[in-house]
Length: 122
Image (cartoon, rainbow, N blue to C red; front, side, top):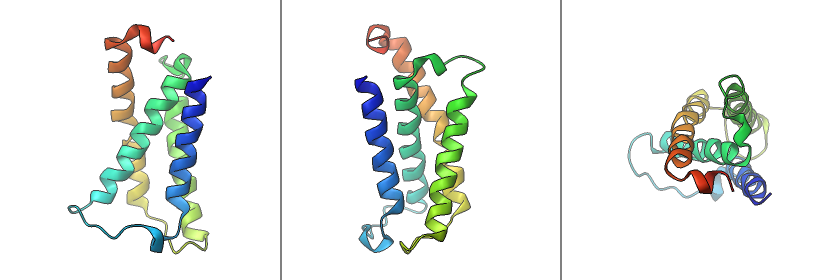
């Protein structure tokens, strides 16, 4: 139950960060395309926590459900940014970065499950 709560709190965090006004975001430039790395990292966390909350999704057939959830959630956030009053805009490359976040997130879950099998089954 705690894992599901943690997942939904993280989802709320991603949603909030995606939809707050761009004026409220810090204007720090770390390196070129840092925002894409941030998108990928946020959705890697989304993927990791999703598999942690619902470990039965880690089967060959069901693994596509979390992948599609990543695609759908990221796309919906980008669409809402494009049509909303938050001063944000739709960015296809942000969505691509969101989708690519699935792969390191799943790898992190896979390694966590392999290295810490007792923790993964709690």
